[in-house]
Image 1 (cartoon, rainbow, N blue to C red):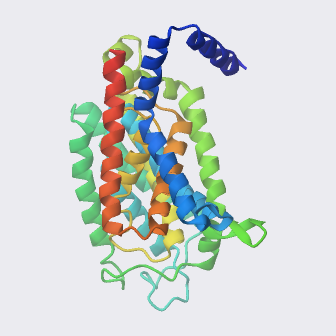
Image 2 (tube, rainbow, N blue to C red; image 1 turned 90 degrees about the vertical axis):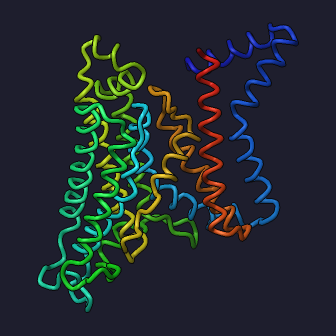
Image 3 (tube, rainbow, N blue to C red; image 1 turned 45 degrees about the vertical axis):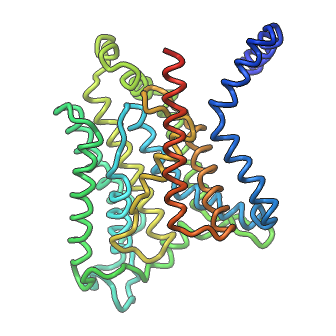
Length: 356
């Protein structure tokens, strides 16, 4: 109700302005939202060129891909709110995915990585991978907060360390560096199975899991003291410290929570792709960062909303699925992804400078 009242007031205030001021504000609106406008225009163009693009099957596929990438984006968003980032996210996803896959291979699978072990309970493996992600997140947060190092440097180091650990892990048992597949059917059904269908189109369970995770993260960000402290530290750590906020503990907690999100992403991804290798999770952090900046999570700190992250993830996934529909080379998609990040960050900085 308050939002509707505020919107009506803004409309009334805009109508009361003189034509010159209206044109200036309209120009600012178009510039600040130019990336959204271009993306929406691209979506419309792709739909016209390929009418199957937004069919029910395609929409469910887009939602499935978005749901798989949403937890990692929610984790990185917290790091960006602290004016940082997390370059280790993708490799943590890869490590936790391979750990989950190795512990949840079917008992009778011929190339089982650890043939002497029975298939672990799904809930136990979920706890293990979340703990692994939380541990690496703690290292990232501790080094950032205690040693006053920039998250870029810290997470670059842990990215390399995590990747090295992953490579060594894949050499264990009978695996010898090969891909980990032959997953237990209960695990794959738990993630990619479906209990709800629209006609002949099944809705994967992972979409509902991601929705649940999103609700929990929304509550943490908006209804807890931790969430308020996170935004306060991101806006101005000195002022937050003077106000009684434990800046060090907040930074560590944000990175630990992010690591937990990466562990959940790895758990989901392992079952979704079915065959996990050392390249699993590579560059996932780029998609997550791009989604966050598209969704309005600002690198200047203290600015970001859960709905913005969701919007960014879905829009980015729509664009990449659309590029695939158009037959755009996958290598060129990296160029487009880089341009999206560059434009989004430039627009974000422009808004910050104007406010100053």
